Structures are given as C-alpha cells and as structure tokens.
Image (cartoon, rainbow, N blue to C red; front, side, top):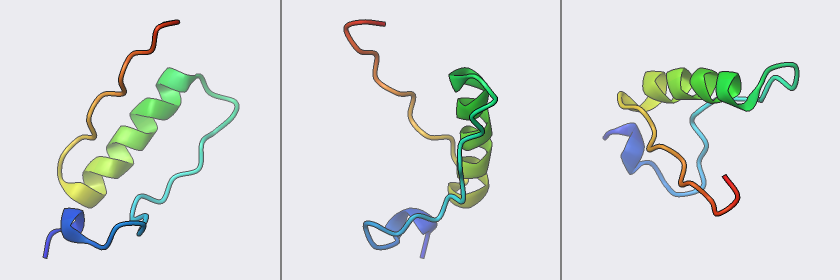
Length: 51
C-alpha cells in the first residue's frame, strides 16, 4: 500500500512551519518532507487573485 492510499485525514508529513523563515523557504522544506513520505513532490499551490 502506498502512502497516498492511506486513509483521508491521516497526516504523514511531519511538518511545523518555521516562523523565522519566508513562505518560500518553508514551502521548500515542506516539499522535501512530502517527497520523503510520498515519493513525489506536492502539486504547486494555486495562485490567488491578489498574487
């Protein structure tokens, strides 16, 4: 069973943001942790109107 097939609501990525870093730096840390769990990188976040 792949980690992606795990029950919904189960958070396998152990991540707490570092508030001393920028959003971009935190996103890169999260991507690496996500990759270690799922074997692929997460989808890019959707752009909002104000970005």
